[in-house]
Length: 44
Image (cartoon, rainbow, N blue to C red):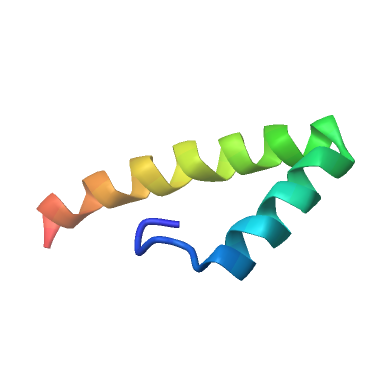
């Protein structure tokens, strides 16, 4: 998602998110994890 999604990818993501509240929560959880992992780059 950071690189930007194609229209087809965005439509697929929207469809998946609308299928279940669990999908939405898991995407949020993964986004938080991704943000936390990016902070590790300062330790290189």
